[in-house]
Each structure stands twice: as C-alpha cells, then as structure tokens.
Length: 411
Image (cartoon, rainbow, N blue to C red; front, side, top):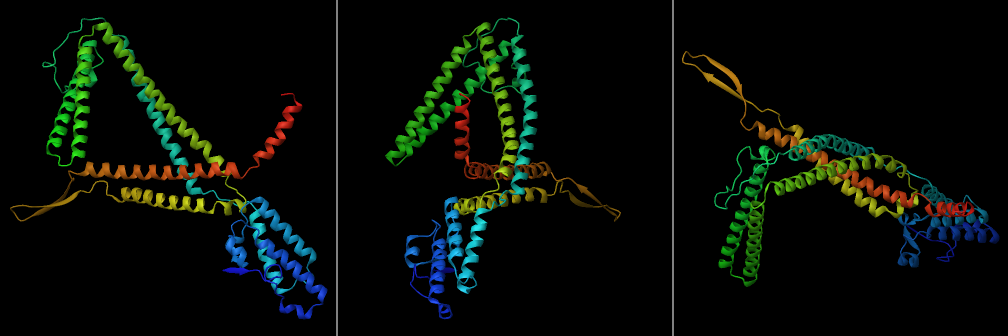
C-alpha cells in the first residue's frame, strides 16, 4: 500500500474539511499535517524518486536509525502542539499510524529462537563427547611414545630396495613400535609403496600425453608426469637415507615422530574443547543480544531475510537426513516359508546380509543431519550475536564515560 503527502508542503492541496473551519484553524491544521508529511518521509529507506513524487509505501516509512526515529517522534510532537482539530480524520489516521511506527521502532523486540539454541546445545554436546573420546587417543599416543622411549639398543639391519616388500603385513601397524628394526621396516615399506604409486601415476600421465590431441592438454599431462616422477625420486632418496640409519638415529626419528603425534592429538583435543566452550558462551550472548530496537531490525531486513532462508534450507536438509535415518528399518529381516515332503510348512525369519550396510547408512544419515543442524544454528547465532553486540549497545557512549574515569584515576 502506497501513501502520499496531501498537505501544502508537498502538494499544496487543502482538505475539504477546511470548509467548516476558520482560516486560522485551517492554517494550524495544514501546519500539523505538514509535520506529519515530513515525519512520514524521515526514513532513509525512501528513495529520491519517491520523495519527488511525494508518495511511498508504508514499509519504507519505518526509520532505520535511532536519529531517524527521534526525528520522527519530534515531528509528531510538533504536529500535536500546533494542530487545531486533532480529530480530523485525515490527520488522526496518519498520526496514529506514524505514532505506531515510532513506538515499534523505539521498542526492543525478541529475535532469538529456541531452535537455534537447541542446535548450539546439541553441537556443544557433540564436541563434549568427542573431546572426552579424544582423551583416549591422547593417552594411547602418550603410551606409544613411552614405549618407543623404552627401546633397548639393538643392531638394526639394512635391506635392499628389491628385497623390501611394497605392502605391510597384517599386524605391521600394531607391532611397528615394539623394536627399532620393526619401526624402520615399517617406514621403508611405506616409502617404497609411495614411490611405486608415484612412478605408476607418472607413467599413466605420460600415456595420456601420448594420446592427447590438444597441445594444451599434452603439456599439462607431461607436467603432471614430471611432478609424480619427482615425488617417486624423493621417496626413493628418503628410503635410502632411512635404510642407512643405525639404532640411535632410528630411535631419535621415532621419538620425534611420536612426540609430534602426541602434540597433534593434544592440539585436536584442545580444538574440540574450544569449540564446545565457544558454543556454551555463544548461547547466553545470543540471548542477551537478541533484543534489538525496531529501527535496527528495519536496517538489517535484507540480512535477516538471507539468514532466514539459510536457516530454513539448512534445517530442511538436516530434517530430511535425520528423518530418513530414523525411517529406515534397523533390521529388515525376510519371512521365509519352508515346505516339507509330508505337506507341512513352517515360517521363520532370516537376517538380511545387507543389514550392516543399512545400519551404517542409517547412523550416517542421522549424524550428517545432526551436524548440519548444529552448523546452521551456530553460524546464524554467530552472525546475529556479532551484529547484536555491534548494534544493540552504545559502546561509544560507554567508552566516553570510561576514558574520563581513567584520567581522573591517573591511569
């Protein structure tokens, strides 16, 4: 709905109601209506072309800043001071509507949502679970490092490239830390496997280059072949270097490797804990900052609209994944009917051989749904909280008060 200015300040038009008024009363009413028209065009949302026309939609009348709200309120007060007939239909209708807009703009409104808080709580719970689980990995990493530190000095044998296997034995990973020799062998097998894979990949790129029709593709394939060839050479050089190491060198390398692994596990544990703490702190901040003034809501209508779309789409995907996981039957067994030679029959159930696949898919979908739900909730809450901290509090005024206090204290 579009509204227009019908007062002398914009259209120089006198209301028919003026017939029943004295000239002085008509002048006062026109002056009051002029203040209302000016108040109606206070918002910076109104475009220049609308100002020239003297009409706009009510959605654009809402102020976007505190100063605009205060200016609109002051103009309404002036209109009330000079109006002669406050019951005039044209005046009263417009005044009441503008007064309603001013009051809404001044007031704080709750914008935080329980669904987002639930998502953050779920996310904090997930991080708490994985943080506790990570403690086990840290303990295992430290135990592995301790095992390496307790190695007793022993002679370490060398091998040849040809004699070294390309694949690990079944229990190689478990036993690699038992002695320096096994650790060395494990590293050498890894390097030979990587070198052979890089060499194989290099040959594949060369074959593609031979059949390439475009010169641009041929050059790209040759470049990739050369890169992989260099990788193979580097792996071979590192193989020879480790193969020549004695016990002390292998021991030092293993301790360094295990110490680095412990540090990475500890760092990941701190990261999980940090995310958990972040979400727990975010929740109260989100609630505290979730009471913006009406003019702040008007100013960020576009951003709020984008976040709402992001939230709705994200929650829809999360609900689909989680719901699909719940809807899947946990153990969909088959009904089997058996016929016997004497004519009798019996019915029993047999498990589906794909049950483990279905269970894995079910759990996977539910986990994906939960993570999407938490991610969307935490993202929206973070953006809203940062915006709320910036827009909903008078930081500049607070800083102006703090600065003189510090100066008086001699700081």
